[in-house]
Image (spheres, rainbow over the protein chains, first blue to last red):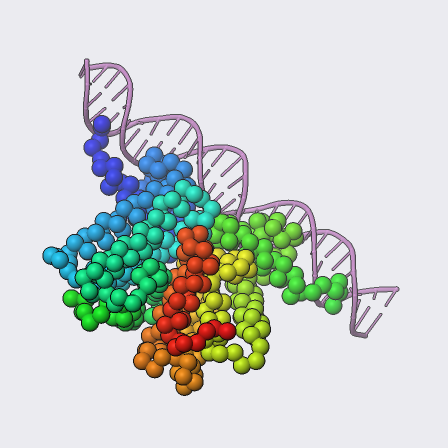
Length: 203
Length: 203
DNA sequence: TCGTTTGTGGTTCGATCGAACCATAACAGG
DNA sequence: CCTGTTATGGTTCGATCGAACCACAAACGA
């Protein structure tokens, strides 16, 4: 291969330009010319690395998703040895909130893509798996927590897992729109977690 | 005035075309030509009734909002005389869910506009008021319910009101994406309401 | 009856869109 | 030192964009 250039790096550089434009003006601002200008490359390169515009949108979303999964894994691994179930569940749920610029932008990109998820199966396939997986994960963790005596025995685990995830998703919108501070959202999540977990602290 | 034509009706006819296109392909499909074709009028009419494209998007959103408010009012009024607080709160929250085609499409339009809310103050002003008002309304209703003995005295009203609204917002997404049935969402909302309201049924 | 205002359709303009095309530089294998 | 593949830039094409413009029909005031 000539001209040793890191392909993945190049694709990432272009994908980031797509994200920035999508968070600013929605998908309608993600034109090939704009992306090329934002990424500092020629329009021809977009064709070379991603092909058509639809493939560019799909590719940028796939990279975004891979990033999100890896970062979430890193953050959860940073908890160290055997944390309590309370802390793990809290960590997973808080990962869904736009608590920093990175996650905020990520959620904005998802919103920009949202309507397309309903129409284009290729995009939906990429984005629909995560929320369901998270909800099942929360349910599993709550079940383990119950066996360890950390979770109140009289709660409906499936129902609570679903509502905790739904609440986190709801906070996404209100925080993004500036109607609620990230700190408030975290406090409200903790309030619900304190109800589900009996007498434990997230630490 | 010549040629008696109902202005508001005309504007509504055009606005509905905007909604349909926005729900299908996002705002990027809402071009003047597409809207004109969808509404069955000439492109010139859009200019006459709404002016520029931005004003068209704003006007269509205003009409959508006015509709939503009126329909919500109607549905709540249909409850008849003195319903219990449980039923009222349930009605308000369920109004947020995409339970029928009308509300489903409405939420899809909001999603299509979402990213713009962050950038264009004129749009944000129209759409940001509702969620806050709903949360305050829920909190007020819960306070009244507590005075009537229908609400558990040991719950944090503000926190629960916020989380109920957030949960409803979260269900919007998952129901729209087909990850959860409307019936499941209603059942999950009822599960939380049953916790907040002591020994009452929504009837 | 005759302007004047208001509503409606059709057309045009410059800009920009996505995508294809052409040229060529950089490097690998022989 | 070639030769072909890979990587990159520049340009062009037909279509479509938003917005302005032009022409005219319909109804009211005088």
